[in-house]
Image (tube, rainbow, N blue to C red; front, side):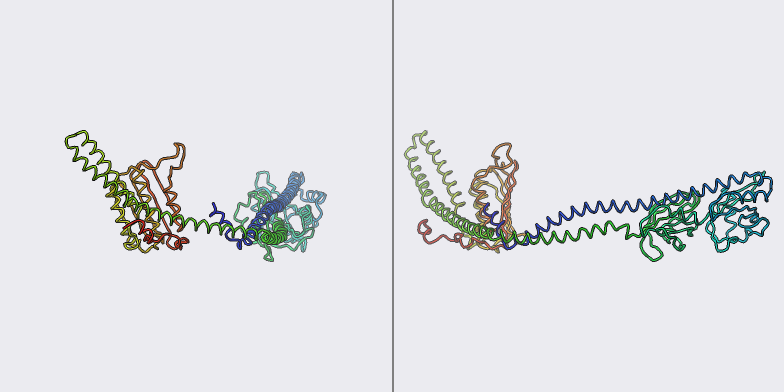
Length: 572
């Protein structure tokens, strides 16, 4: 716990950048939320501009379709005239002159060769022939096939300087063959009035185009603009479709000045006319650009305020945190020093106990065995006494074997002279002889490259682990492996015992004595750790120690050889 607190508070100089990052993150989150809301509104406004452009194009197209339908109805009424059916051309001319039509329009009767009467000219005046118009075969075929047709924009021969759009209706002979057609010229002023009916924002352009995408009438705002062809991309897209199919949509293109525009359009399948409303993309995207400008100022201000607040907060809390960090660091150092001293005392105590058991207790057991042998000589005729003496001798031999095993575990071999690899091999072999376990060992030759204090730590971990196997595992086999991997000394010990007991059946944690925490403590002094996996098939212990991290407690660990005082006290 102390170590965790120390790590948390150990770097007060980093407090300012951390607080700055926190405040910046908070400001950024606030800006992102605000930006998301503004962006949503901006997208809604942008979509509203697109929808308005498209609805305007559709409404204008309907207006032109109605105008054509009205002209077509007028022509149908004239086609049923008795004078026309009787072939009274003069009477029909007088009827045409008397027919009310829009200002700027006129009526024409034509046969298969050319104009017969034209309300712009007196009766019997010379009139144009079909061949005088360059595209007359196409126009004639359209009237013949469809029964009626709307022409494209063309120059007028009868009215000098005028351009005309003709709406023609087929008339037949009694046998059903085509006799000619009646034409009304649609007034450009009337078409311009329809185009100018909806009020649109400044900068918006609208136009009416014929089947070849030549302009019939165009305007910007409330003013007419010079007649210009439709943009190339727009023209190419619509030309690829079916001319007689009604379609609408929105596309992006560039105008005659190369500026990006949005074009909303509707092409009428009845007239083959296309109505288009063009909006500069800058106006379409104005809600988004406006949103960015609105957000930039507050975001910069919030970042500035956040930075100042972070600086002020850091100054207020940095000194107390630094003082607390120093206290924790000091306490951590004292705890580490005490841990090192405890480990040193533990080493000393282990050696003292081992020597006491070897030199005192073991000798007394040997003496007891000798005395028991003399007693057996006295009891040669007493079978019951001999049997009891044999049982006592067997118990003494077992106790002596156990004592020698524990003494060997407590007292490390000569690590300084032989090195870790040789010491581990000798220790494991001796452990196997004394315990009756089948033990195998596989150690790397590079183990002796590790620092002396790490070698001693690893040896103690192996000793403690094997002691646990002997005391608690009930195993018949054990394997010890040790090697250097990626600048770490790794030790793995596996047995085939019954595994570690759980504290209770429902708990996930296994029961541990003081040995495993002691191994943890030893390894953590050098930045290492311990991992254990256990089950009914045995236990696997993995210990590792980094070799690159210098030990903070190397000066506190007991030297490999016992002190002169211990030698004198423990004996040879």
